Image: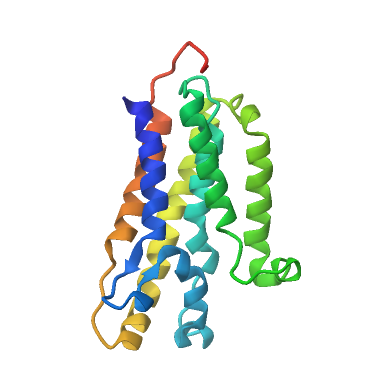
Length: 207
């Protein structure tokens, strides 16, 4: 059953990313993980340089989910059939396309603040196009890459989130705590490398 842990972790991570990280009774004041990448750059403490953050860190969970999905979809040792392989590839595409900045234009994608997002998006889409070939990677190589991405996807957003939380509390004029979406994402990201490392090898190829 360990191999089923991976799709569960991927769905949990992406669902948590799109879920509230800052909860509020007013829907317009709810902040999701996806919102934070843009939201934080408008905070006065960030604009003034009082707090330094790695803004792309809020997008690393998307990169981790997309890469983990496309790297595993065709692996014979996981033996996923087509009815699960297709959702995994769709999940990889959904995560990748959410790297596109809001109100984007081709010229905006090349602006300095969005170049890393654009490069990551293009890299993931190329990886998705060649996803059957990634099944040839040795399991330790794929697992190490996914572990590095998921670990960064946990630590970078958490660190920067707690860096800016006091500033968000000041804007809301009330104490705030991380909402359930953040912890669901973290739990999902933890399950992903566990599944990569501990799923037993299977001799038969997927059909």
